[in-house]
Image 1 (cartoon, helix red, strand yellow):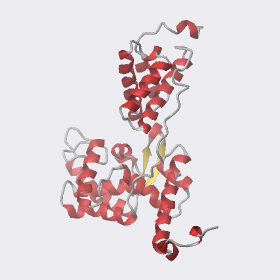
Image 2 (image 1 turned 60 degrees about the horizontal axis):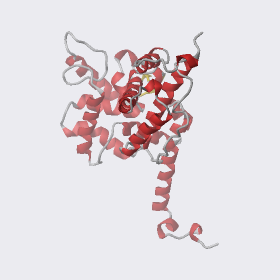
Image 3 (image 1 turned 90 degrees about the vertical axis):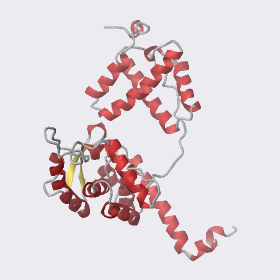
Image 4 (image 1 turned 120 degrees about the vertical axis):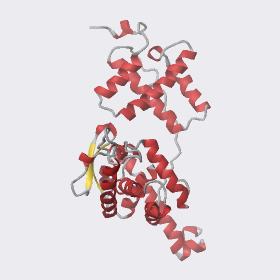
Length: 316
């Protein structure tokens, strides 16, 4: 059996590609996640080249120097932490398969990140936004209304939306099977408005499918091919410009879905299931959104809150 210590220092470049293949084939990670890991490791590899080493042989000083360079370049703390997570995973893999004996990233702590609430639209705003395709007279109204309502009513990630295929749909358009992060499968539901919009869109979609290059993806572009993630972002951006609601990121539709459920009293564990979150703590931030909403309602409605008086202001 090969000894770990004997293997250290005899490496050749190329283990990063092998590691990404491992994530893809053994861990079953989605291609999108693997690409994100690959991007982080490519940046680290480029940094290692400036200090005459390779990722497989880098030490704590090189890893710390790389992370410091990201911070100095004003990379957002959340992105720095994600990169650090990528490096930790890579070095754990090297240790597991006896390519080295230590983890140079193990002692580094994550940066503190500001606790920000997710951006979302209130129920009335979301209703107005979903009606825009009917009134704006741009792009492809039938598709765009179905796209917005399906994404919102099912709480889909943008990557899940573009991957939706006809075989995933329930025959009555009540919902669909979705493959989320980590190739985890879940079932999502469509609202009545979402079902109606889909039913109106699907015949028009069929008429526009490209001959010779058919696709079973539900949402297509105007040329008849599958719509891309940048394509969905562009569609949402066009309606956002006309909405009067300011910048609307596609993910805000998913945030709106979760926020509206929590505000309506839906159990947070059910919301977690519908969103496909691995951790409950990720879903619990929507309860904070609800608390902020309640505070605003209280300030507007309660006479003591409006006047700035009350028990909480009394001297004790």
